[in-house]
Length: 277
Image 1: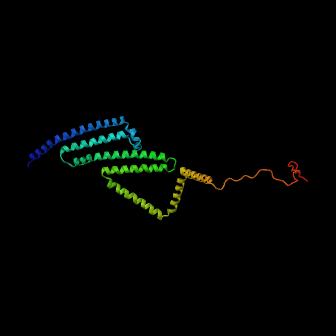
Image 2: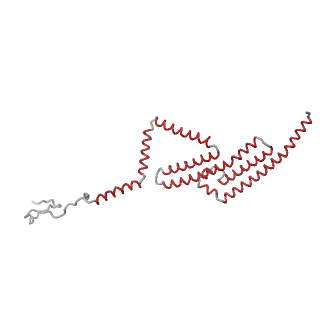
Image 3: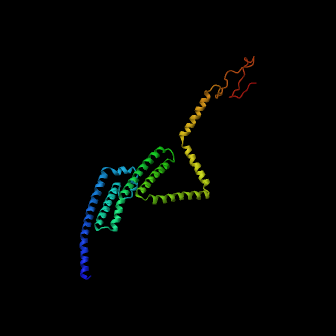
């Protein structure tokens, strides 16, 4: 093969590549424009539907306090980048099978699962926040009411996160090591605490906690007192029951000896101190 043939082959390759490149650029430009339009439309629709106000009840606003996006902007940005990924996949597919196109195809196929996982987490956060408010209001009179409400919220959110990871296909590879680590940590703390002499301190703490919980149960104490009063009333109403009232001393005149009625006893005079002679 001479130099002319080599140059001719390179020129043919470039000529065949240029149409594909032009189609690729056109796809990118059109996809970018569509992504921008969809981002604005989604943001406007969510603002009209008061989406931000709705997600505030689920505690999402606290998570986005330090972010430059609110909930509507975040959803619109997700839609924008999803459309860009689909555009890149379509653009690289023009050049035939290639590693970049395969990677983008896998990412695009994973996007629906990611969207469902995000929805699961948002719903779980909303339910957890509602349960926290209900439990906190029901147990607001107790010092441990807020703690129980927080535990319930964290438990529900954790279930939502596990379900979301399962939806994305990473639950087995992530949740299992985390669960094993947590259990191992708890077991280690128990072993070290028992071996290090935490029995008495923990016993004292449990006694203090239980005593506080017992003192904060007025309903139970009131029912016990009512039971005792009812039992005493029932015993008094039974025939032959011992009388509980004490008899008052007699206040009538004291009898005197015969012949002493005419005798008048002189009383001492407190002002002079004289006594009868």
